[in-house]
Length: 369
Image (cartoon, rainbow, N blue to C red; front, side, top):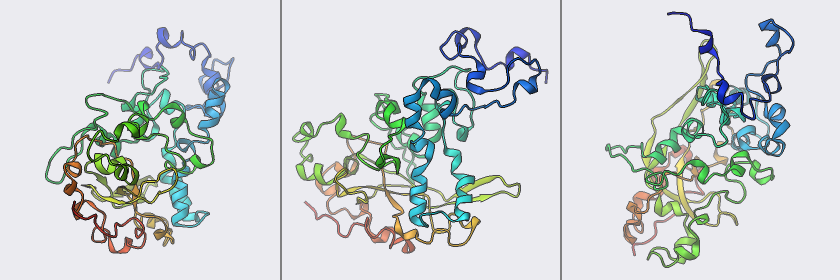
């Protein structure tokens, strides 16, 4: 293979980047390093490949970085919250080691959204060294949130019998990007104590009624009754089959490289009792998804690392990204009422998970209309 020419190794486009706002700042101000030396090794001492938000970015974007440093994208507090609930308020040494090896790679920085592909998705600059004010959905958002949301939203899921599920109506034909619903304030985080805990803490950042007001929905459809709109999340009627994963086991190779294994996922649609019913989310019924966890998910790092496994449901409140106007369950009243197939009942829950899910299992099926 011929030697790569020097110009081909340069990650910058002189014409575009060096005349931009960030290009005029200079390399060292963001990446660090040593000035006034002609020696390459000396020049790179103290250099940061991915500048920290608390450092370089904060010089100019003070308000944004202060919020972002407390966001779920940075703190991973959502993971900590559920692990602490299933184990102990202070993670055991074994569970903390597992978390450090497998979960912290999901941490994202300013640069891993606005300049490069996130490291957990392989890294690499988006477009030379160009800064993207609005990160491109396909190489940033769905690079991390791809195994479920990307396939749902773009219509890439198939059922067990080989039927391809349609894309979300907001993607096709409208082509809405993530930022159209999940705005800058949400993506950078919320410094309020409630919203620092998990994705579903506090008042919903995004709601269907932001674009579809309740007063317009009432009367617009025979099934848009006050009862339905008050007691059901919109997903109950407007989601279709989605992906549930039943286990994930984290391990390390003989060389110490962290990896994980999962069981095959399943496509189905289940309605259950909302585990998050509150003043902020008053609906009693919602769509539930099985998350990729079981009692032995962290067994490689020690025995019984989740002693309070039953404290949190394995069938979780979810916000599907496969919304359809017309769905099998809203075709008629009896498509839902009296139809046990679409409700999370005891027979659909693993025997050793019945206790964990006792509060979300539907105790009876709504009668036929």
